[in-house]
Image (tube, rainbow, N blue to C red):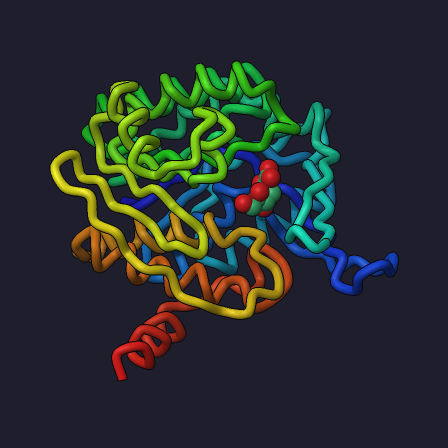
Length: 308
Ligand code: KDG
């Protein structure tokens, strides 16, 4: 059985590591895939639900998940559609993504993907705004997955991961608002919420989320200002760690995966968020979403050095 099963789209990553030069490092991305790999590196038992193309990239992903110990019984192959791809470019405002993904194998997923029974055997189902944005059939699949999770007694974790290249803001707001009510753990970022609510105040944002009917635990991520855990009774701020980031691609996914892994290992919310902060900070020290994801020993070392 599994601690975490995630659902979404993996994307091959081409990362421009030298500014202004046409040199791209191939790696792997896709927010929920990143999260589940991060969780596996912290010792969680993980599985992934998706569709890949019958192409080199699909095969590379299968190899990656297998080498990371992520179960692939719920990964389908589509003979007629490709695995998606994205470019990462770095500028003065941080990283920017360009996508080549429309019509991808993952975007063609339907609730039939859920028949593997993996959700019923997991403690957490992890999904995101991107999982719901890529197509209406993927969006239906996410809602069907959440219903299955609840019917089976599994907990639902939802990362807002708003990508406005993928869907109009009005649809994003309506769908995320609906989905956050079904989430036992909601992980919005302040940046994402600002697009949805028009305000930049964390307390008011948490009020908006609660007024919208979210009943689970909410961890609002404030970037360099850390995060706030709202368990429905108390709001607890947690400071961020300062690092000289090289590439923050996937840092939020690392946060989500590490947080879930630590919850499965018995941490309190505060302990798990502190751990996830350290893991996410470490994940920004190299290029790419997956390659620099830290392992448990590195995170523990980092946490220990903070105590000394
Ligand atoms: O969080 C990082 C992801 O955004 C990146 O890996 C690519 O999944 C991706 C997306 O859809 O933007």
